[in-house]
Length: 441
Image (tube, one colour):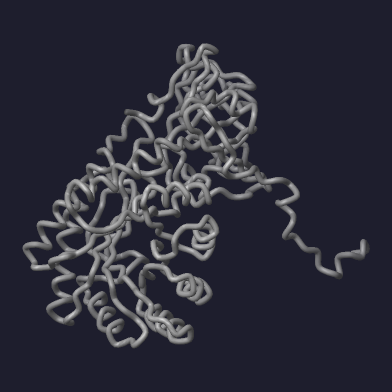
């Protein structure tokens, strides 16, 4: 079902989401406002976990927290039995602060800093995902200084091209992430890891891209990863314990998108992995995946308040809202498409299409170039769908605009899970050089 079709209309004619009146949410918490449906998040988490149960595969679902990293989302993921994939010290700190079990966390990143590596090792995370030759020595040295053995997984490039935006295509050879299978760099890294006294290779990892609708690239990548695991065993005598296939399952942003159910991708992927491992004699292999967008993307929306409506005869109508590229940079970065509805005029007929324009001082700050909406006027509440992933995560203070609040909704109840940033917080890290204190230039 399309995300905007999961909403209902109450007796006031207002749109409801997770049982909450969106117009009332906008009044209570202000706009822009990120809104997240808790039950929708939990449903997808359970669907992914269920895939392992149905197929008999052993392993874990790791929540790819770069999609949305907050204390509340880590609480939900932990309660649903998921692990967490983090890619920075900040994400790791947030997860640990929320009480997430360190042994269920993996640390990724193509350029981890020494403090981040040491933080992860001290916490006792499940594994650090090695992304380069240089990192092998760095992690080995850090582990030696702390007197621990670091469990590591190796990120490899399976050479699989997924049909998605070039900025989120990560499985091909020309990519900053991982080490190649075809050029021999991944196998060389395996040997380097094996030679380190303080490292233990526990797994192999790949991620072919994001927002992928096709199943075939995942299956091809699975074949290549099993082949490589078998090669590692035969040439190096190392039996890795886990194959991690990353994430990348697409979601619906507009009517044109046609993704499968997220767990349908995983169930077929696990079935393929089990069959290939059996053929290769890789008994007892564990599998892992790292969905992020598919867990929180469609579960979220953003509310805005309409300000000015500018009609340019024979050109376009611009409907300006109180947010934009500061709270959702994906359109200006990737040309991402979205679907919007007026939450307070859900029953009114659609009029002429217009552009939903952001408030930021950039001509490219257009959230939706062609949005079929009822007649818009100042004060209307606009809902933009499928914004649960990579919107709050990528928000900025461009033009010194505060980052919006976020609320979690469940069966008609709502609660803040991220406070709105204040002007005082905007300037709390600003300093004035001593020589500027004198008012004279």
